[in-house]
Length: 141
Ligand SMILES: [Zn+2]
Image (tube, rainbow, N blue to C red):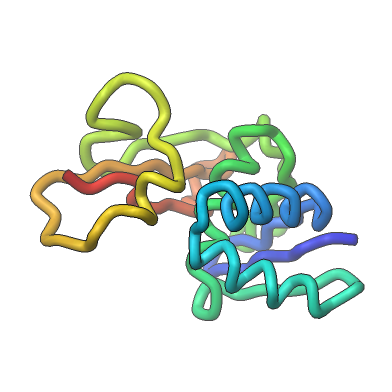
């Protein structure tokens, strides 16, 4: 089964079982409320499911992680062409991936209390022809 996640420029295709495993990890081991909510939604459907960016912004973090793991294919709506995760071109937002060395973890972002951003960073991916497919702020300091 698949999960299709669609935004303005791209349709991402993800393996449903892998995504469920990832969400269960965040929901159970790190008590991430966003993960619990989308997990309960996904578990109601036994088939493939189509999500859009307006409904489920949290899934974008999961998509970004899945691209890093090479577990996604992406249909660029501008090119009208599907690409594998390894073909996508990463780019940085703001101050980049992390204020420190190492990888910012999802559970750190979602356990943080919201406050006004002073500096921020994030990342995204473009297709090989330069169309921006996805981007998220992943840390705020
Ligand atoms: Zn493209």
